[in-house]
Length: 109
Image 1 (cartoon, helix red, strand yellow):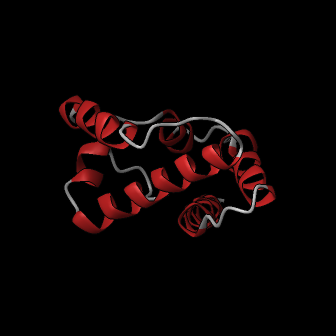
Image 2 (image 1 turned 90 degrees about the vertical axis):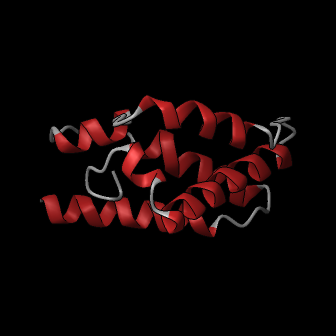
């Protein structure tokens, strides 16, 4: 959604974008661990391997965005970000993603 409606196969085909996705995933793992939620870092590879064969997959947030529906930014992004910050975990990639998503919403009107 932050890329304006680009499917996961396209996102993963751009090395810089895949790097950003991995950074966000690592931030999520770090934030979870800081809150005593034992997320295994191996999930990153598992999720990447599962996503690649899906082809032109459209995540639900992207579908909501392209179809003009309200996005669930608070429960999906803002609340986890608040919890990460409360736990003392820096989440710059996730903050950038949320900023990009809000910018896309502003463009959409």
